[in-house]
Figure 1: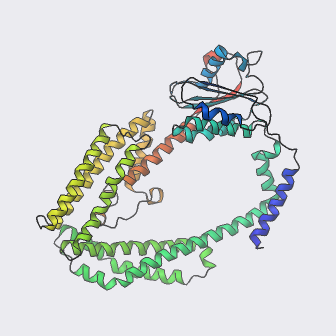
Figure 2: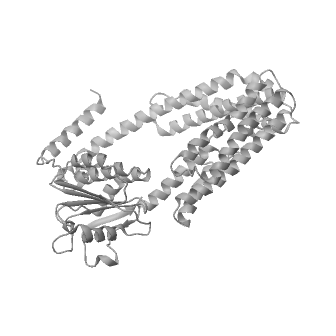
Figure 3: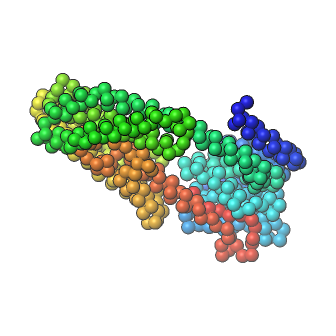
Length: 484
């Protein structure tokens, strides 16, 4: 057994010994399940069997309440109003608390609130109530109301009356106290192992690209020498080529450095960064020499011009192909005016691309004109995507603060933060001539929108309400609600 296995084995034995010292935990099914689905969003044929099979630590009555409210509602106040009017058995005899043995799970799918409430003998901390609610939110955000309710109640069963030796606090403390040294050693070994694996992958990526560039070096120079400098596109690509040899020499130096590293050296994070730098430099050169070859073939109508032209169309075709998935997603505003404009543009552009290709083949238009038309079409798509971004932001954001947050993420995605959004050099003539932020693509739209929705959803989930409003009086039962 290796050192890693020995370390982990000792830790596991110690933890098993500690946990085994506690009394056995009971698994108790709910004594009753009551569902008041006033919102009409739950599939009770799925919900009821699932809830009746949930294991609690103590006999517990489960109540589920849903209603269609508004974003401004206080769900705590609403659940108390409902209980007083229709389920006084949910309230303690003195009217001040929730009844003993009770766990209430409440949902407002329209106002987008979720709440959890417990009798005094079942109550948990505020942080644990947040944990229960958070267990349901990803599903609720995707309108999976039944599944989200089940997930939240299952998490509640794990936390309500949880034995001390199963609590997160105990496990964290035990792990920290007993196995700090072992965990530190194991963590160090894992980091080094993962770093070495990552370094080798980056090295292989860099070597593949560097070999391609080296093998095609003379051909790249010949292609560059025959690109017409008078062409707007040819001149711009040649500007990039003028630094090609300098960058190739830099990549050569990096190659020599990384290949001098031993296996042990590859386990160190500074060297992983060095190997990644070599891989990125080689990959960009590999893409650029392909663009130089395509520019020469297309502008001079060489034998491979058709394949070169097809590669120029590829990014635009991919955007058009991805539009329907973008529009049909949740919150994609697929039935909006801006969505209709995108679909109409897609149909028109697919016909236009065929016409451009036919005219280019017949020499009815020049390669520069064909590239101009492609540039204009991609620019028009960018504008249509920006208009649709305004539509989906307006549909998802509840106020100007949320809209501003989403617009910022969209703008950041288009600006092209590579670390955050994975923006990379586009290996095409237009991608070489124009900066990465010039065109707003479908993948960029999706990245910005996903990040914006996540940021807004997190901000919504962060607000917890604990009071019962003006109508609650002196009621102080354990419970809270939050947005999703």
